[in-house]
Image (cartoon, rainbow, N blue to C red; front, side, top):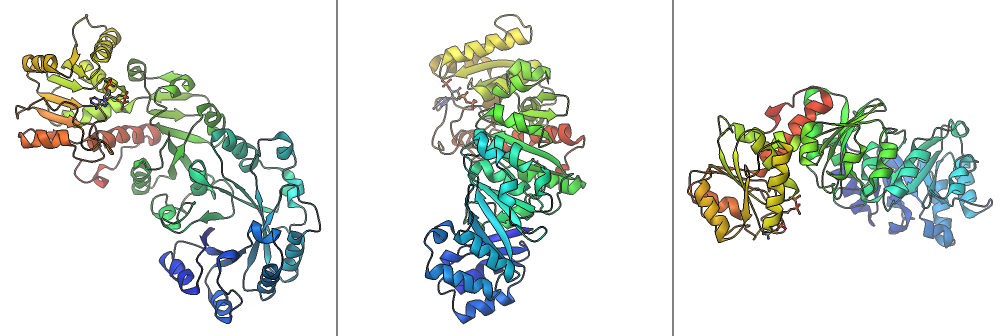
Length: 503
Ligand code: ATR
């Protein structure tokens, strides 16, 4: 059940919020503190007529400063303007507090109780041991809800919560419905997956205005409520990763092919903690992005050749027995080229940059038989990359040329007469839009120019190439093609390419 959390102050604002999100929520929660004049008659009639489950949320501060406001909330409960009341509860709550009184009154008036507990510091052993029998005491089966919240600072805090609280199925609380909210970037995937993981409520915030997933994105990108406990789970790990376009791409593919799966972004700061629960979450496949492409290698039981050759892995396929590593960046890079060059063999290629992205490019080009020159601001890095790739592919020394991004480099380019120029540095990428990695390089006009930067779509470097008459390939082509192979590895099915226009 999707609950929209609204914190607007006036009746008009609340109505507006609900209207915008109509069809995307099953109930709403009003924060008592934010309401202006909740005692007014028109609020009463509004709530009585409102569609969906109506929840009144009593904030923690209100409980601590009892008085007229508590009296008012008791009146609202008595008038049964709401179906449920959310009461903030302490982990080690003693009996007989205002919370108990509110809960008892709600029960007496036929209003359900959501007992809401902040689980910060759950990793403290004793606190975990006290969960949940004590916490459910006094709640009514099938009517009330035990609601647990956490704003995790990272996976060291999140991991134990997922393992011991979300995935824990203790006998004692059978019959008491459970729900949870994990706030902040690390909590995001669990906001999306709440119902799949047994939470009776999925709490959401209005679009572009809150700490939680918004219900429209939940439905349109993640296709709630089509997923349940049996739905296959895929995702992307990185940090930061919430801006990634991969969830849009993969989820659209599942929808088009009728595959029961969902793909979510997992911001991960600590791989050990993440992998200790990844299997228990039954994650079947993961895309891997910066900064984890190298560090995930040690979690792999098996890797394809390209992973070992490049030293980076961007795709993991997980089963009960093993974690397999793949590198789809290499094919993702080559695929768009194959449309331009009938064969890569014999192509003269200039690669600018010698960082992580360049490794996949150089490996792919050389493996396919191109003649490669690597130029880098720090020439020694270019030389190291050339030597390493030669060793990996058992080629003789000097097969791959290397040099600096200066006059010496220009001379090497003149000798090579490149058919292809690949730009692999971060120059031109937001927020470095004004940067050109090699302004002294002039284009002949025949060479194909491929820039791996995809945000923005057209870099300064590509603009220069286009102005000189060169055919160009945009970075998003690589991004999409690496995802196609990932999709195949994850699902065993070809991505429905017609979904992507112009590729
Ligand atoms: P990535 O994994 O994205 O490739 P990286 O490993 O940090 O990132 O590599 C960044 C690449 O961009 C390097 O080749 C870097 O050159 P140096 O090795 O000399 O650092 C290159 N780069 C970054 N900023 C640059 C600039 N302003 N001009 C030229 N090259 C630049």
